[in-house]
Length: 193
Ligand code: ADP
Ligand code: MG
Ligand code: MG
Image (tube, rainbow, N blue to C red; front, top):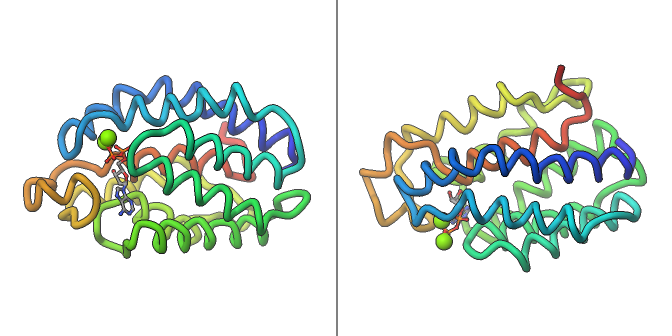
């Protein structure tokens, strides 16, 4: 993946999050404050507007900074800082090995910043397992990622706003796990048909 393709994919997330706003809002209404849809849409509207050129490293870094400054809420700093950290390890073109490395950094950054581990019903449950569903060709398929998000349905939240719902958080897919599906799919080296 070269810089032009990365930019295209990140810009396409603006459309994706516009389409998925209602879905993410509905999930966050169940176990949060109902703003995750609008947060992600606002974040990627800003990315489309502000991140328009540069190397892979520049694009990832500017995306991170833009997400941090435009998304209010827990997800902004987590996604934003992760993109900044990924930019530091990105190569001139992203190949499968480099993508593996970026996924590791994405997971490490969320874990460190969110003080989160697996099974706490957050975006981390999808991000930390993305390497396991990464194809040999670098594909990160929507349906594989969706299964990881669906696994959060039976978990009890112990981090973020959803933790206030305790046992009642069970039965709903975590909103951040769902948004992570779309973000990771945008990094796929294979286009889905
Ligand atoms: P807020 O909860 O502040 O309204 P959002 O609704 O935008 O922010 O994002 C909520 C999502 O952020 C959750 O669904 C969860 O996936 C993620 N999240 C919240 N706190 C943490 C944390 N400590 N570690 C990892 N992810 C977290
Ligand atoms: Mg929220
Ligand atoms: Mg909020």
